Image 1 (cartoon, rainbow, N blue to C red):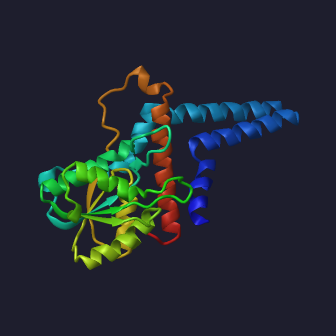
Image 2: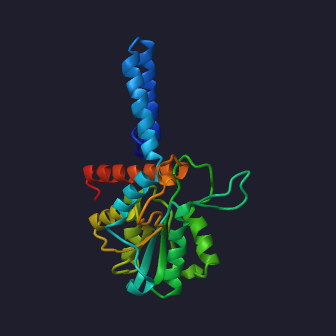
Image 3: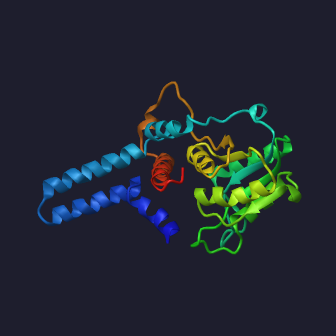
Length: 258
C-alpha cells in the first residue's frame, strides 16, 4: 500500500496535479458565484504552470540538486570491489514495443559498464525491482543485466538485487550482497539529482559509498535567450522531477530513512 501511496499522493502537489487542483477549485468558485476569486485562482494556476514549464526555472532548480555530488572524471574514482547501480532507467518491451525502452537515465547503466571496463569495480550490483502495477514478467534488473552484457560486462561480474521498489529498499537489499561479497566502500551509481537522497539512505543503513553521479541534464549558462522563458514540455518534466526528488527527501527524513 505504501508504494502506491508514495507514487499517487505527490501527484497532488507536483506542477500538473497542483494546477489541475487549482483550476477545479476555481471552477467551483465560479459556479457558486465567486467569479473574481475563481478568476484569480485561474491566473495563479496558469502562472504556476508557465513558470514550471520554463527552462530558466527548471534548470536552476535542477542545478540546485546537482551541486552536492558533482560528476567526477574516471581517473578520480577509486577502485572498489563493487559498484551499486540503481534502477529506473529501462522498461520491458510490451506491445507494440518490441525492444527494451531506454529512459534518459540510461547514463547510469553505461557508466556502470564503463567502471567495470576501466577496472574501477570488480562486480556490479544491479538494484532494480519492478513496481507492483507493471504488467511485465521480466524484472528491471534482468533487463539492465542484458544491456551490461552487451556493453562488455561478463555475466559472472553482475549481481542482481531484483526485489527493491524504492531507494530505501535499494539500500536494504543491496546491503545483504555488499556484506556477502565484502565490498568495502562500494561505488554508488545513480542520477546526479537523485544522488543526495541515495547517499543519505545508504549511509543510514551503514553503507559508506563513493558517489558516481551520472545523467546530468542541466548546465550553467552565461546568458539566457527568449526560448528559456517560453513554456516547454521537457522543462516541465525537469521541474516535476526536481520537485519529486525534494518531496522524496522530505518524506525520507520524516520517516527516519536518511
